[in-house]
Image (cartoon, rainbow, N blue to C red; front, side):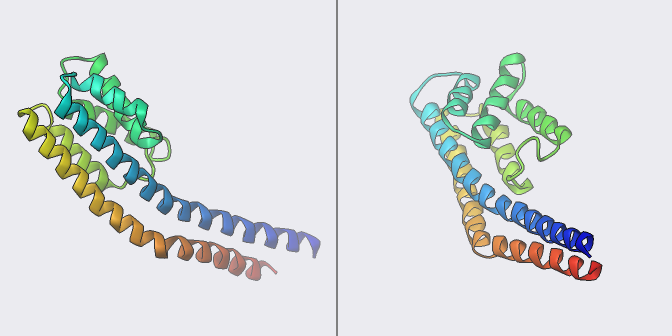
Length: 179
């Protein structure tokens, strides 16, 4: 009887942990989208006010912004610095492929595919036009990420609680079947 009770307790705790892990992803997405918007604002300032090459600007922004947004900017900058013949779009593609090969948990787990597509379109457009065009592309990407961030904020009100309840109830249901 004691062994069944211990097993049931482990199932309930594991359900709670799994539900909490899923719930934290919603908070992480909201936080990471806010950080990426901040990073793009800094990049916009670098493009509008300085004459730095993109790898150096991306590296400066990446070092100034913490978390996945900063790591992403630094990764693109490192890719461009290691191979100066790459365009921004090619550097972005290489970083994205490396992230997908390493698995989402290794790379940038909170970003969804639509968030990464916004950044992909931005990096494809940067470096091709004049300063004003590049600033407008950065602003467009920032505004699109703001829309995604608003959606993440709405999801934050509902889904984390739902996942926590599902985890607890799923673990309790499995525990009832064992006991």
